[in-house]
Image (cartoon, rainbow, N blue to C red; front, side):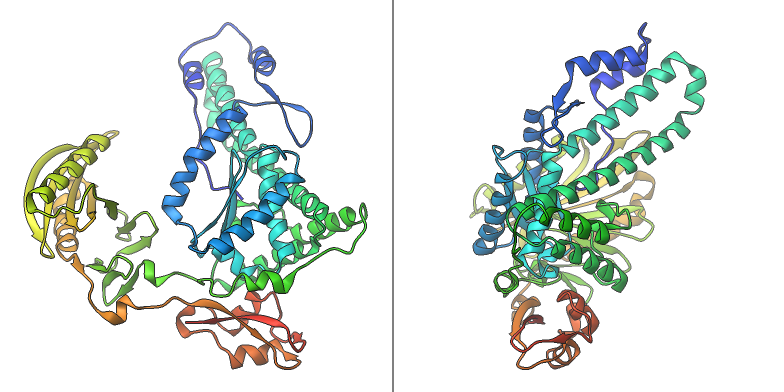
Length: 507
């Protein structure tokens, strides 16, 4: 599945909005078709495209750095190599075997997988935890490779541009059409949704095709869709797949049928590889990793960085590998916290001050901030630099207060921002959070351990419920006994044969 993308408007489209052309829209499309067609590797047919293969590769490469910075990758070379080996095998039997692909396991607990143009495929540790065999994993990876092979990202981009062209040129030539552009826009969104569902169906078909060629039983891929449905019903860890991959409602049945058809074209048997897959999950972090930050007694504590700072009461917090974001429920302000590597260790106060000034100046220039006040201070026994300025956002002014704190090998930064009219109300909160920044020294908090997947073997034949009660998940794992059954792809009362490997959770 692919992350949601915003609308795209090219310079060419902007030109169409501001000029009247003595050319009909159908003729314009014909000219575009003649100069902008590419052969789809999957269908073998020529299709209109405003994104070349080299542009797809460039976009994917640029986006990859941001994805890695935002989510991080799982620190398990063996698991990364395992997923990559399966992914590369899929590419070899795909419609684009000559293309270079990158497969990454993201350090994120959401149940998700997605692909970017240019052959970048991502799968989260969250979805790996809920998969139960290699056949299902290969089906999911094949689905994502299918998105890339069928150039779905390029097609969505082209459709967005065409809609912009149609509405823009139509409005320029016919003001009557302009009155209905909003209605037409709504219809265009429905059109994009339809195509997105078609993309999903095609990606499912390609995933089944590729996995079957490799000798896997893709009915396990269909069973995973059933797991996603059950997981959505629990309200515990909502799979992002459900929102980024619009579900036509018959996915389990469709993939089951596709699997039957594909398996009829080649001799079996078809592999599942359950135990071999599960062995790769031993020790996998499940849920949020407290070592990357958690809330404790009104403070955000980050054991990995050995720091803490207060969280404003009632504010919502979102933590990622790139930054921490905090905001009040009404959204009238936002507070960002991030860290960046320092050029040196700042062994002297003068060097620390120079480093902070450099960081502050670079940020202000990059963001276009009109700095109004500056001051030096000390936070947590470390030099700090505070500046307040403003930036114009369309027709309103925003005020931003930035605090840069020197730390051995790092510069920590707080950016508090609100509309200028509200700044006096939020400025004390911005200041209290930044001034409350401290080194965390509590060994109990610094040594906190995450919940991880642990494999056990059923000592005798019994319903799964028996083992869920014997090895219950930790109380703060966010999952109960029925949820543990979903994690294993089993029903609570389903009888488990003796010797079956099962996933449990432990700390």
